[in-house]
Image 1 (cartoon, each protein chain N blue to C red):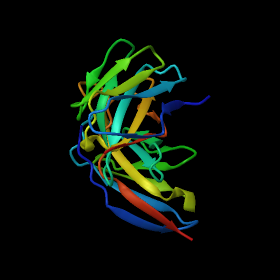
Image 2 (image 1 turned 180 degrees about the vertical axis):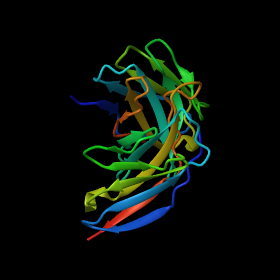
Image 3 (image 1 turned 60 degrees about the vertical axis):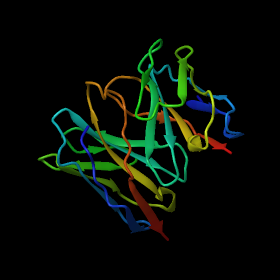
Amino acid sequence: DAKTTQPPSMDCAEGRAANLPCNHSTISGNEYVYWYRQIHSQGPQYIIHGLKNNETNEMASLIITEDRKSSTLILPHATLRDTAVYYCIAVSAGGTSYGKLTFGQGTILTVHP
Amino acid sequence: NAGVTQTPKFQVLKTGQSMTLQCAQDMNHNSMYWYRQDPGMGLRLIYYSASEGTTDKGEVPNGYNVSRLNKREFSLRLESAAPSQTSVYFCASSDGTSNYGYTFGSGTRLTVV
């Protein structure tokens, strides 16, 4: 699976949009981009995933660049409860790494009042 | 619908003792996984079971054994605990298709003294 690079930390004001970047310049054509978050040592929580197109669900939006070398997770109206570690993970749709997530260090997002 | 349930939540072991961490899911998922998370680190895969009756090693399998007892249950055993196995252990499950929206348990915090 492709390696992903994320900033170690980011801040955001409550009520504003939080935009979390992820670089995956070596991603291959069959690799999805997945986002998870971990709140205060709880089990990680799935947020969203995508392959080529932008995606939106009730939690967030995922913007993937046309060349697929980077993506941005957007939390449209951040709240204090969104303070967490956010992980961007590239996952193959098949092969020997099928179904296995490789977690990096992630981005610590701190939402301020 | 409880999702993924892990027991116990906390455990302290002496070096050399053995124990089994239990995990059960009620979502009829095919695949189950065991991860460990050391302080300040991302999660690392210990073992996984792609389907009932199969198990495979992950990134850090040494010192552990697993049993996929049935479709619901996937246990992790430490035969002779070592201080290096002090960690938080997370169990997860997925439907085993290309949807990697894992569901994680709340974790077992293990200290080996």
